[in-house]
Length: 494
Ligand code: AMP
Image (cartoon, rainbow, N blue to C red; front, side, top):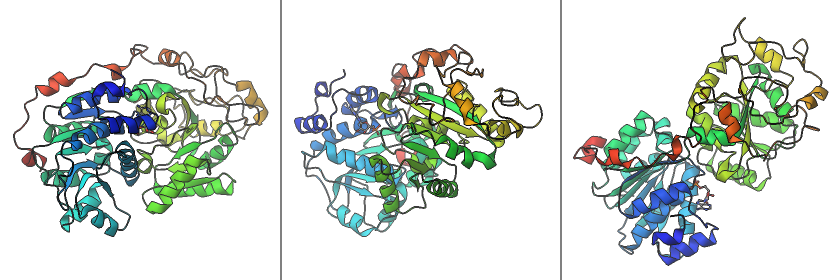
């Protein structure tokens, strides 16, 4: 089943999604929607960009139509929990689009904005409440929101919610919900913590899984650049001379780091903005809008702030700092390979980050080719302790193209024009097959070029990863259904 019209959704919903340009269902939609419409609890393992929002929103909207007008003051008939304001706003926008021909009331509750309009919107009761956990609990404790009428719960980006330390808040919220309800949990990854949570809040869930880590990583042409920490900004300035890098998302590990990188870029005449938790809601929204419209070329973000941001057309992702969690790497680079597009990522790796790189490569089950031909490569390798070649890249050998650790003349960069960057071994450093950020004027974009995923598999260390990846596994619902769920939800959730 791949057409929305086969689902039995009501006409006003079909009309709205058709107007939104949706023609065919995405894999998560075709697997999740029929199950949710049958009233089943569901775990969806899917990342942003897969169409997961519609996968839970459409059946939710259809469900709510059954009891239109059943709203009671200060209550919500359904609750969608999201980890960040940005994601909450995005979900809310989507829900409004999908239900624009219906009379459902939805509202959004999140921190960093005035409480008053949120309290006012909740006063008559709503059909759909989209909320971040902190503000929701605040308004609940003040008596402005009651959850005793919730019939349908969605937990979006559960893994990120737990990463952000929301587990206690979530448990408090769940305690207030009626036991009799339908629950859908979405998560990009399924670490043990999420499975444990799922076991306590879902009943015999169906599990659907799409685009797991390795599959997403395959679509992105990835490169790592060895560079000393102190030279990362120089390298960034150098890389961004390549005007094939049209819309770039740059990741830092800290908020402070994001600000500093953005300030540096501005000084270099590169339009940019930083987005992170310390920025006001308005500033974040403005930065996002500017990035979407192309008013700024670079958006510098922390992992948390960037999660769930829906921006198409990101040509490149630069990991200014490598994430210490391998999953975050996949989320980051996945921002440039949305909706079937391919993209390019560059990861700046200093000496201390080599261990992170190793973990990342293990996680994505492929090695990330080292791009050497930039002015700081030799310095980056020199930063390794003598004889250190633990990343196996080039064992600290000097870069042929730079001398004495000094930036080399960019002219030589042109020699390294990439053919196919996915080298057979994934480890070798042949001059062919490289991107050319080092030679912006001549090294023209590899951007947009489809990445050959079989080439990627060839680069796989083990060489044995099945080409369809674990993501295309059939629905794993059987084992879940047979799970003996503990009787009392609230006591389990406590
Ligand atoms: P999501 O994963 O929910 O963040 O969705 C990613 C993007 O895909 C959003 O811009 C959606 O509007 C869009 N989208 C979702 N489902 C479909 C579909 N079936 N056809 C086309 N676009 C879609």
